[in-house]
Structure formats: C-alpha cells, structure tokens
Length: 192
Image (cartoon, rainbow, N blue to C red; front, top):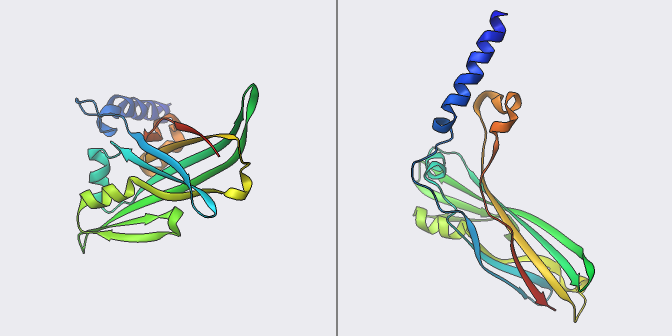
C-alpha cells in the first residue's frame, strides 16, 4: 500500500511540474512551416527544394549547446492524381538532417542524409541553422517512374525535435513523450 501511495505522489508531482519540465514559455512561438517548396527535374530524377522557417526553439538551442544532437526528419510523399479517381501513391521518402555542436572546437556540424550523409562544418549557429533548414535538390523518384502528361501531388512534412523523459519514464507515462515541433503537410501539384 505504501508503494502505491509513493507512486501516486510521484505521478502527481510530474503532472503538476509538467509545464516547467516541458519548457513552456509565456510568449507563444510561431509555428514551424515549410516554405518555398519547388519540384523540378534533373537529368534522371524528380528533385525537391524547400526551406523550413521557425524551426528552432530556445530549448532546442540549449540542448544543442549541451552536446546533444538535433535530428530534423523530413517526410515526402508523391501521388499520381486523376480527376474522379483515388490518388495513387508513387513513392514515400524519409531522410534526416542532423546538427551537432562540438564544444571543444566551438563549431557546428550538419549532416545531410539525402546527400550521401554529407557533413558540413560552420563557425556560427546562424549558418548552421540556415543549412539544416534547407532541402536543396533532394531526389524523390527516378523520372522513369513518372508518366508523361499526368498530374502529380507532392507532400512534405518535417518533425524537428523529439523530447523524451529521463530514466525511461516515457515507458511508464507514454502520453508525456511526443514530437515537440513539427510542420503541417505542405503540398504542391504539378504536371509532368
């Protein structure tokens, strides 16, 4: 019985302290969005360009400077659309951008998974943020998989930061683990 009351007290404390733990602030933050979404072709692939805006929170920067990597996950879906017919999913693509702060060199490293895990180093946070927020010619699908004179819809979404509780508490309280910053789906349609 004593064990149950201690556990109940601990859970109540977590629920009451939740706003402090989650890093909530009095000022509302602008929602992360994907802008400047463009799809075009290279010689062999459909490629996509996009920019993230409002992707960083002060909590994310603090965590980055403490030596923990930030992972931005991007999700792309391509559909073939036909009037009065269900959309046909052609391909889904997922890739990550990762940023690490090297505390000894005081530099930022950004890894771009869609570009063969290319690693870039930056001396300033601003330059590193700019690079991690860019999708610059990511390959979506080979052109041989697209049919000429058809209409397509491309959707993209980003999940930018995953907060978990310490000491595996997210296994006990699964509702307290979630993606903190994510964008809505951003969609464009085009003819090929």
